[in-house]
Image (tube, rainbow, N blue to C red):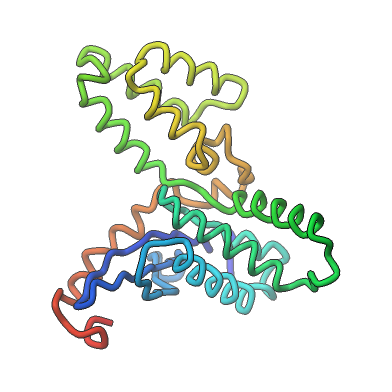
Length: 246
């Protein structure tokens, strides 16, 4: 199994059946088939962190079971490309912390030491998350078309400057952010959400803690997963039983 081609791309699939159950799907790229293929599909009843967590925990177990012997860096296989759902992101982090803690005997840890270790694991979890750039691009387009925020004559400049944040290194990043805020004050709330929340940590290379090498091996969007949605919907229609829908 080649680490250069084994990449996980995760996206929530709203596959509605009779009881409005959702299916979360994780896919990986198969170099032999030259296709992205689903490897784990989980029925979830709600789009909350608890349901996402169980999906990711099982995925980590599967990766460890089948990939640990392949490479010493099999933890890199945890790497995900996700959208900006706070619940999904929190579910991944909680799953990572819980899964890693289960591998150690924490009964001898003091509460302070355990909390410190949990914080470290949460920070480590972020090194395996990469945000979908296409979602950011679509958001930029929506804002650029809102002439109460961006004047029509400034639309191209706004799109160029905000997209450039995906390429700017840390030495110039915040300077560019402040310039955008100065030029378009009505877009400050929108821009600050992208930059200063956890979304920024997984989207912008300047803020990301994921290694550059690992980031290059992952796609920049969840498009590969989303392109399979039409196939899922062809497999089943609405208003059918759970078993038939699955």
